[in-house]
Image (tube, rainbow, N blue to C red):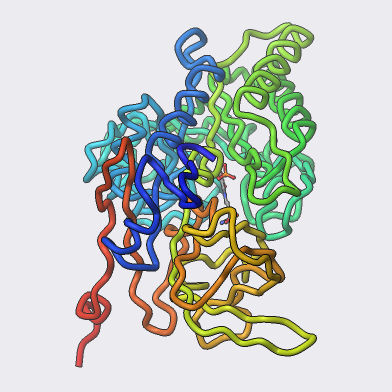
Length: 428
Ligand code: LLP
């Protein structure tokens, strides 16, 4: 994947030996393949027709948002989707242009809403009446007006893990399309004198491989644009189709390329608009995982090994659910290897366990791997999305460092947390 290559049985990323990286920066270590992340951004910009059609690609910061990533997406001409005051603050500190920020969330706090208004975020993606009322009140007080999207729950069931589905009716997110909730809101929208309804947003879920649910979403959204104009006289100019296109984690996954996904979406929008006799709106897509997942890997040092005869061999590493919660939370699968035994060594089936005091802290169950021994450096690939961003200090394990690699050079973009920093918030 990306800039990974094997020379003399040894794995390199960005032109640097993984063994060297582990020696220099210690483990556990997240390695960020900057070139691949940039290439993914460029694929989106090109195939989602950002320049020709003035469409927008808004990177979903929740996947991975250190300051450096914020800067990278600014350089690549992407917009940014944030979901909290913390992500907003990160964007602000990285000098990300606030007019290119979309602010999501089903329960933005009063402080977060005020912060968004003060910093001047381009679009609030409004989830519910409570937020509409608060926004209207604060804009009135400030004497300003705010462009918003309404988040719609379109009633689409996509095939993915239950925890990361969002489009179905039974969802905490958005105005429900099919039970009248959205229409009631639109009918009374004139009450919100300080809010301009410029767009609609929907997100049907994450790690979705089929394009069909996305195409159904397009049909629903475009019909809504027409209906809203005809019934309520409101011209929707922007339609945000959310994120969620699936990526490769293991050989069971057969994802669409960014190009295939973008082309299918754009073609469908054009057809749908033509059929309905409406102008094609500005389109927004919000990918997170498909930009960074494959650009990240994690290096661990192999520690204890436990062979339970006729049952299983557990191999424990120096990280685990604290740096990657996805296997425990979603039964997510990954691939791994020993970084200097890429092609040699006896193949063995093992279970890679984390070091947390918890039986569920397993990174990969029953995986075939070559030559694994205590002291080896193990790499788990495709950890770039929702790895660092969902990391925790459970068991008081400090956060691992993130190092960016490119063209034979490496640079720390997130420092390893020290024990003192671990206690920085605590008062004796
Ligand atoms: N836009 C919205 C409104 C979202 O809720 C999400 C993801 C995205 C965009 C980006 O989706 P992506 O392209 O990254 O699939 N922690 C989970 C994923 C939860 C995603 C929640 N929303 C995981 O590790 O799989």
